[in-house]
Length: 105
Image 1 (tube, rainbow, N blue to C red):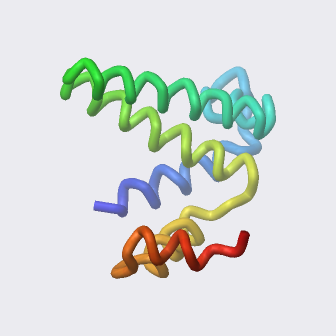
Image 2 (image 1 turned 90 degrees about the vertical axis):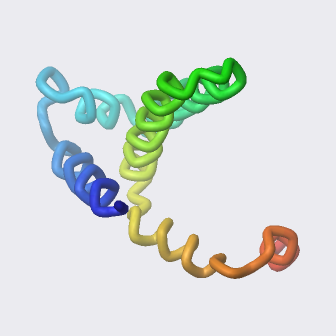
């Protein structure tokens, strides 16, 4: 299942140097990390609205947009998907309360 995320992350990385006139991803990346973060936030809000409205079809589409824009935001800051997945693996099996308590303040 995560193969699609790896493929999407690779596509986004490949578009970093592409012509912004021919690629939405290149256009977002060319506008800088702040714009990528803004778009991620917009999509997250749209997903929240779909969830609150109990609209599963729209939520599915918005969640896909959230994942895509998250990967673009990560790429804009040179954070690898593998590193994020590694952090999730590190947390696996920990209670959320214990994991938060272990973070440096």
